[in-house]
Image (cartoon, rainbow, N blue to C red; front, side, top):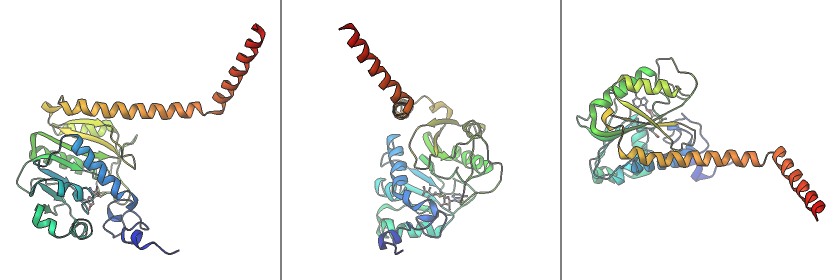
Length: 269
Ligand SMILES: C[S@@+](CC[C@H](N)C(=O)[O-])C[C@H]1O[C@@H](n2cnc3c(N)ncnc32)[C@H](O)[C@@H]1O
């Protein structure tokens, strides 16, 4: 079977983890939507162009290709151990000229030392990082994040929510690590930070959390996120209702009711 040249260039025929800048970071079919979801979530939480963003494990700039043009020059920072991913992301998604215009900064550290840039941040992002990291790596990341988060900073992360916890010590990829929500919140709280689970879509169902300094836990953005949560709950309830209403027993019950009603009508006239 021949592959359409555009799909070929976008790595659509490849599997997650293959050595292609889109496939290496996840299923290539989700590359665009996961970029949009990250960008929309952070801007919904208040990200503006003057803020400083740290993108932890920025990969091939899936999110960076939206964040870098949006932020003011010198305000985007990415950590990514695989330097080739950043180079390919710039080559295929942004173009070299972005480097002079927007002056993003990159580091290739793999020890979750977020102090490498010697500055603090308004927003931190770990998209599809805690879904591959061990508990020790997550602890190191949150402990380091605490040192570089401004007092009102928001750290946005996601992970695979499960009924059990991954107990290994290694980064897992392809494949991934998984944790209960309680365990994840405990990891965060052990570092003296507050963990706030939120509802925000993700094509493979990763669970989003916000990590903030404890004195920030009652901020307005949480009330805004409540609206999103309520919408998500309403959509889930509607989906459940549609499923119930189309069940054969319910449809049969409706037919019987209509039939009984018609019969009663006939008797009373
Ligand atoms: C599943 S990809 C997600 C990439 C990106 N956040 C995105 O949404 O496309 C995970 C990324 O984490 C990077 N990574 C692996 N070990 C890391 C570490 N110790 N610190 C930071 N990033 C790491 C990988 O190289 C890979 O680019």
